[in-house]
Image 1 (tube, one colour):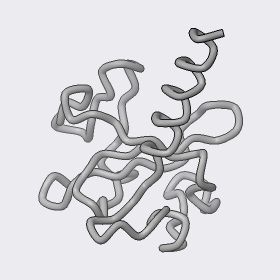
Image 2 (cartoon, rainbow, N blue to C red):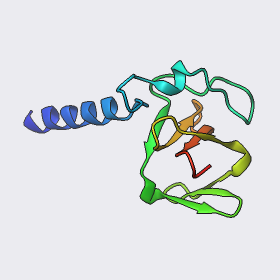
Image 3 (cartoon, rainbow, N blue to C red):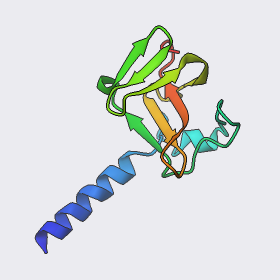
Length: 107
């Protein structure tokens, strides 16, 4: 029982910390900013669709960015500027990338 409670608490912390908040703490800046996918023009996200990508998992390349953990290359033309200075990946229901945001100056 304790294990279930602990796991539920950890999942809650991860879920609440994963949404795109700007530096002022405004929730879900990506959805509220009405960003759209440069791939197909669809709206970038709902609150559960975007997740912060640790900088240690991102490598800048000559053509864009390599997301190391998923071995995914994001072409430079599909990268948008992150409002909060962090890397974010928004996904479609099938898990494929809808949007990718990189810190200002890195784009």
